[in-house]
Image (cartoon, rainbow, N blue to C red; front, side):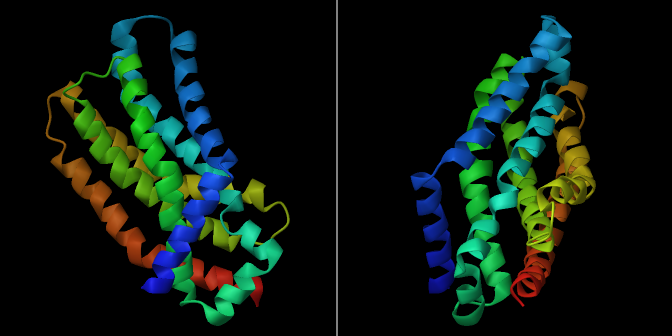
Length: 221
C-alpha cells in the first residue's frame, strides 16, 4: 500500500510540475463545449436540452487526450522496467497510474463542468445529478483508458489505435451517464441509469487494472 500511494504521489507531482497534458485536456473540454452554442444557435431551450449530452461527449473526448502518455514516458526512460522488477504487482502499478489520471484529468473536468453546465443552461437543481454521473463516468473512463493505453504500449501508431479501442468500450458509460443526467428534464427517476453506470464502474475496478498489468508485462517483456 505504501508503494501504491507513493506511485500516485509521484504522478501527481509530475503532473503539477509538467502540467501541459492536464491543462490541454481542461482547455479542450471548455473550448469544445463553448463551440456548441455557436453552431446550434442562441436558443436557450435547445441548449438546455442538449447541455448534459454535450458535457458528456466533451468529457469523454477530453479524457482521451493524455492517455497516450500515461505509460509511455516510463517506458521510454526505463522506469517502467524498474517498477516491473522491484515495484508492486503490475496490476497495482496500472491502478495507481489510472487513479493519478483521474485525479489530474477527471477531477478538473468535474470542476469545469459546473460553469460549462451553467453556460449551456443546465438548471442548478440538475447539476448535482450531472456531477454524480460524471464522477462515476470519468472514473470508468480512466480505468478503460488506462487498460487500452497498456495494450497499445510500444506499438507503432499507438496513439491512433487508442481512441479506436476506448470509444467502443466507453459507449455504455456515455449512454447510461447521459440518460441519468436527462432524468431531471424528463421528470423520470435516474436510479436505473445510475445503477447501470455504477455497475460499469464496479466491473471496471477489478478487471481493467488486471488487464492493464498484463499489458505492461507484455510491453516490458
